[in-house]
Image (cartoon, rainbow, N blue to C red; front, top):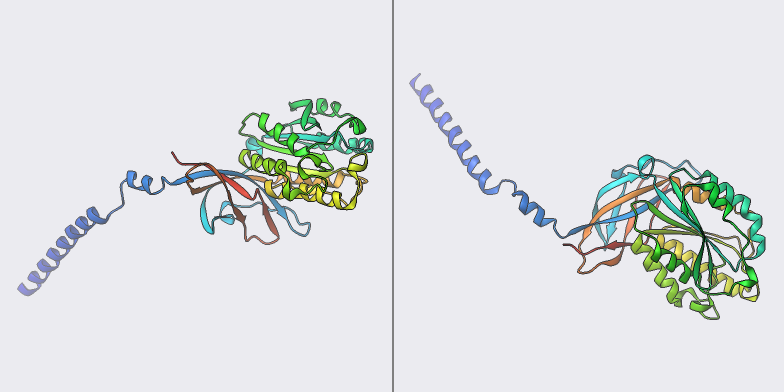
Length: 327
């Protein structure tokens, strides 16, 4: 009996000493204070991008959850801090339709399709119309949610009355003057993509400084650029080689910014309705992505890969994210 009491006393003493020892360890090796945690993540900055979800094989576009999204930068996986469907009270969109004034007058045959496209956009979408001419944009209608007013602003392109210059110079000017906003900013260009000013006689997009400048400006500002190929007037709008390179330039712009370009061989499309329907489908299936990237010494564009392992689903976004420097 006495031995039992002594054993109990020894066990109680061991428990008490163990508890005290654990408390001491907790003080030494417990969670770091908040200031230390903040310091460890102070090198991260938020990067914001718009991502379009697309389905493969014509299937219905699925909803994508935050856990289904992975972001990689410089081979390292970054943390996704926000993934929000751009619908409801987050559906704000500013969409500018840019028409090349060197386009053929036959483009007017597509106005009924463009009107329908405008009418189908949600009331939350502000739409503007401009005409590209002489390297600048002549605004026919400022951004407005009055879609009927937008339709009335459409007119015949000038054709021979407009000089062939850089559509990318005009695009850059539009983006430069576009005020900052929390809404998405997206552009639909209807153009041949012909740029003798920047691409030389061959219209080579790989040596075009105006195209390069438009890439960078669009990515820094979060602009998504779509384009529909429409032949121009005169000899400048003809030729297999030049047309192929012009379409390549439009395709590069789409890839760089997370948009798409549409064309059918080298002639004018009979009906651009399917193209416009695809643009509308993209606009309805976009998400706002925020991820944490390592702070740069100075703001810079850096390659970003946004992926998902969901079956039959693709994520389309700009090739580069704008990473700002930390405070």
